[in-house]
Structures are given as structure tokens and as C-alpha cells.
Image 1 (cartoon, one colour):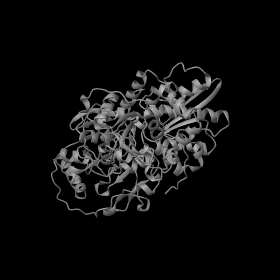
Image 2: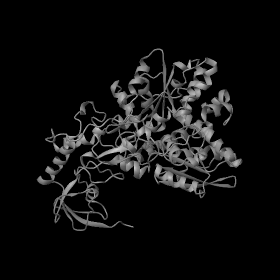
Image 3: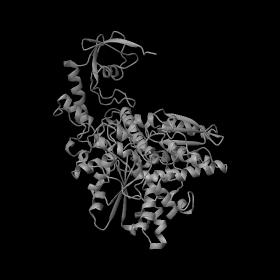
Image 4: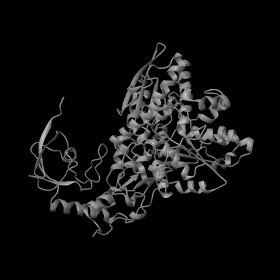
Length: 590
């Protein structure tokens, strides 16, 4: 059915736009650009900045186009002397309390405030600072908040509340005392923040950024006494090209590997190897629960923001989580045990770096239980320093990696493609699709179906769990046993499934949850901006790489077969239990 249109006049020209849209949305639909700052499609439209003002015939004053609905016959001016002056004045007022350190700012060159100043021709502000300088919040292991750079646009508050339903930050105070704050000013590290980083992804300035570990990593790379290896998450190969100036969703796996070698890493491995390993352990865990009346539904555990969310808000349901560590943490444990032993490397010299689309991974790698390799070597090597022997030492986001490439002069786009190192760089198409919402479910089904039925799926593409619908469900037939499964992305959608579980109404046997919109490819550490259209381009590239892989099922990965033959022995076996599985903790809401 054709959507209803209305007639509207913009700057003297007649147009038809979709009914029910705001003036701002309608103008963007027909290609008329109105500058804005606090507005962000699908996230925030609280009209706080006053940059998007326009004239509407018959209105007593300028109106804010982001919250004013267009109506039949409306006549709108998007630029005039009065409009231009209002925008400049509103922006100058914002700049009065904003630091003028653009050259050394984290977001220099990718800052909406900076871009808007250039657009409106603002060189200075006549207004004096009216707000006291607030203390930087660095209590989190993943994120840093700089209140001085906050323009009170409210995007972070909106995404935390409306997309993630976490409410870790909110507006506080009134008038000149207005600010964004955590509960009782405790800081992000001391409240129920999941570290998802969606706030940093939507922030127009550098008021919220990830904690930067790049300097420490470069120091380790330059240290001849250390062996520094790197693992790259599936979503990086469809994000790093963007961050280096290539097209949105560019699939750059081979160039990424070459660039990491140029950066100086001793070995370049792939987190997809342990994504395949996760499927083996998780698939067998699900089968065990199904055949022994274990706790169902079983819920995936590879998304650390989701794990912290359930620990805070739904601790009664922790036994529904798979005990599998995330692929990142499995990799660290395997690298510092199996790989170190295989290559004759002293694990104390081994530095494991992760490149992740996710800020929550920075927190995850420092969880106190994530040091399985220490316990493996403790008696063999008489180790004492538990605190500094994590399985994964550092996590870099896609954005941080791009800065490192630029710092070291890597000509990314013109690099020749290279392959990952063996054995921890061998992966399948099942590992690739972990990047997209529904990918873990699809990968698990490819293996679990074959293990249970003894026959491969006729079609490996489980399209029913693909796409960006908030909650998707499917029914599988395993040798006559029908199982309902569900997939959710964003924590707000996860709440719906958790409420069903706690009410005893869940019809599912297996549930996948991803913290971020679209899954990891929309993670909080990905390039800015990340919109739904960009997420779709990244997803298309992920599924293309899956389709091009010679092996597309985790259990057929030759390197996975080898690690079980040589080291782990069996899925869910003793060594697997010690290195690849974990427990969870109940946390308070505050």
C-alpha cells in the first residue's frame, strides 16, 4: 500500500513528503539539508540545541524542525537572515562552555560540533564560560567521560535508556547546573553500566570515548623481549576499511592482515578460529542440556555487555547462560597454553592483543576470572603474579586501530592482501557470521543439526534469523524433535526474552542475545557514524565472506579438529572446562 503524502512548500518550491514526518525528516527526504546537532535518527530528538530552527509561515517565532510535524500546505523557510543568526547564536552559546582544544581532541576531524562551526563560519564566541570545569570520569575500564566536552544533546541518555534500557546516565541539575551524570556521581565504573559504548558511538563530540590502550601496545611491540600476537574479530574486516577512508562496509580482510603485520605484530590470528571453537563447546553444551533435562532455554554468552546486563538486572536467570567464554577470551586462554606450548614460547613473554568492535571487551578481558592460562601454568612454572597474567592483555577498538595505522604511516588502501597465520588463523564461514545478529544462532545450528541428525543441513543459509528485526524466532526439527529458538539484539529486546524466562513463559530452547544494534558489526567501538544503512552494508559483506569460504561449518575446521586431537581431547572435557568455560556473578543495580 502506498504511503500517504502531503504537500509542503520548502524555500518557495513545492514538494510531496511522507505524512507524519517532522519538518527535518521531510526535508532530508527530498534532499534539503537542515543543520542539526542534538538530533540523531532513531536515537534522539529532544530539541535541546536549537540549531535546526526554521521559519514556518504563520508561526509567531522560529520553530525547531526536529520536533515540529510537517502538515498539509505548510510553508517553510530553511534559511534566512533571522534563521542564520539564530543558529550562530545558539552554537556560540554552546561553545562558551566547550574547551577549544580541537587540535589534540580525540574526535578532531570527526566531530559534529567542529563541522557545524565550519558550516556556519564561526571563528570565535563572544560569550564567556558560565559552568565550572567538571572532573573527568575514568572509573570505567572501558569508557572515559569528559563532562567539559558535553553539549547536553542527550543522545547518550537516549541510547542508554531507549535502545539499551540500562539508564546508567541521565540529566541532572537545572539551568546552568544541568549536566549528564551517573547515579550519585559514582562514575560509569561504579554503576550498572554494561560498557556497550553505544553512548560513545552516538556522541557528537568527545564527551564519551573509549579508554585508549594503543601506546602501551606499541611499547610492547617495540620491546624485543616480548612476543606480541593479535586476534581480529569478524566485524573488524567490515569496519576498519571505513575508518581508513574506504567505502562503507568494505570487506578488507586481506588488507587488514597485511596492515597488522606492518604495524609490527609477530603473528596475526583470527578470533573466528575461536568462534568456531565456541560453536563446538556451545553446541555440545546445548545438546547435553537437551538430553539431560538441563536448564533451558540456554542463552548465548559471547557478548560481554549482555553478560554484565544480566548480572545486574536478571541475576536469577544466570543459570540459563551458556558457560562458554566469548571467542575473545577462549582465544587468549588457548594462545597462552596450547599455542605457547606448541611453539615453545614462554607464556610470560606472550602479549595477546584483541581488535574488537566492542568497548565492553576492554572490561571483559580484565574480569578477575579471565586468567585461565595462569592456573594452567601456575605449578609448572611456579607463577606468583596472578594480577598481571590475564589471558587477553589489551583490547583495541576499530577506531583505535585506525589511529595506530595512521600514526605508523600504513597506506591501507594500497596494501596487497595477505593471509592469517596458522594455526589460530584458520576459520570457517560459521565463524565469520558471528559479526551479525543471528550469526551465532546460524553457526550453532549448522553444527548442532549435523551432530544430532548425522546429516548436514540442506541449506546452510538460515535466513529466518538474519536481518535487523529486534526479536526473531525459528523452529528447528532435530530428528523429529522440534525446538523453538530466538534471536535478539539490543538489551531492550533482551529484556523481553528475559521477562518471559523469569515468568516461566519462554517457549524457546536456545536464545542468542547481542548487546548492540545489528550485532557486533554495530558495536560501540566501530567507526563513527554507524547508521542502519551502514550496518546493512557491513552485514552484506559479512554474509558475502561466509559464502566465499571453502569451509562453512565449525566442526569441519581442520585447525579445530587438530586442537581437540592434540590438546583439548573432547568438547566439554576437563581441559575445555578449565580453559574455555566460566561462571557469572550477581551484581547490584547501582
